[in-house]
Image 1 (cartoon, rainbow, N blue to C red):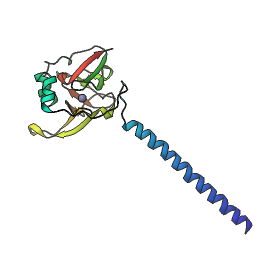
Image 2 (cartoon, rainbow, N blue to C red; image 1 turned 90 degrees about the vertical axis):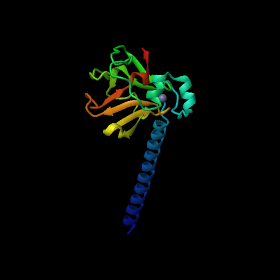
Image 3 (cartoon, rainbow, N blue to C red; image 1 turned 60 degrees about the horizontal axis):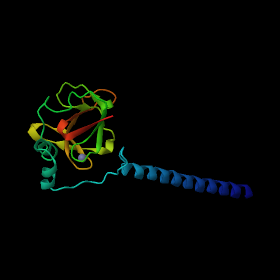
Image 4 (cartoon, protein in one colour; image 1 turned 180 degrees about the vertical axis):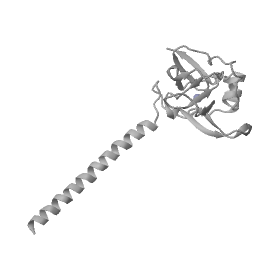
Length: 176
Ligand SMILES: [Zn+2]
């Protein structure tokens, strides 16, 4: 009987310890998640949504940048600044300068638009389904200013198999 009591006590203690350690593990996970959702950029800024009126955007963007970034337009293929840019650096958002893509993930797609197989940080580029022009495409925009960037397709190269087809005018290149 005494042995059973001790055994019960040991089991109870083990259960409490386990529950406690699980809670601790959960707390650590939550902490990590919180840090990630705060989305620290490579410049150390946090992503805080930028909301401006149409008039404000119009005042600070070129006509073509306004048309693409704010009205979901598309620049003509092979006309942008960066489709053939082979320099090393970072492509930031043309609307708010959030760093979006690296030259390290840029590849030759033959489309006439700068193409990348992944963004610098998944959280910096958000997706929406776009059913315009009778096609079902996945639209991508900047997570901070909601500026339209282009579309993402699943016919890209390894390692992701994705092709982020981005308008040059939605980007600004910073050589590094
Ligand atoms: Zn932006």
